[in-house]
Picture: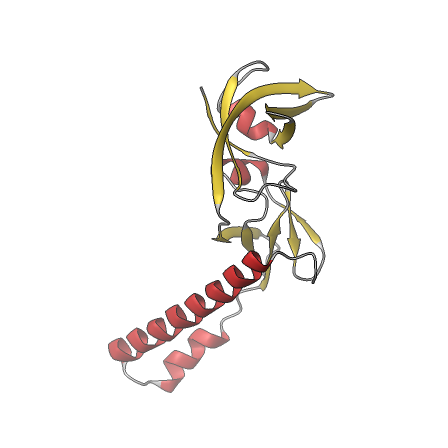
Length: 169
């Protein structure tokens, strides 16, 4: 627990409070639309949604609250411009399908660097730091080594290894 930044804990508490408020509002709206029909409203609660796991995006995967690592599709991470440290929700449907949703974007900043490739991996060099970027992002933006690119990194990027490619400049 000591490794978890206080900002992330505060953000998670805030997200939980927001979710509880939204859920209460949704229940209230449902009751106002259909009345207090217990058979209808209780069936909403009992529908199997599959297994839900929340976790933190590590730049390539989600590390779940259960300490397991779950693969995040590169095209989803790239399209959503996920940043290392973002909070995700994974729903594993009854048929085994994985559905990710970003529920807690962390504060981020945009910086400019130069794209380079080493040993089949892509990096963006910014000052004295290299950030890994996903191949899916590089191909989407048709970027090539040597191109100047814009990336998003955590606002407090002291431990960030990954960046989200924002644009090729």
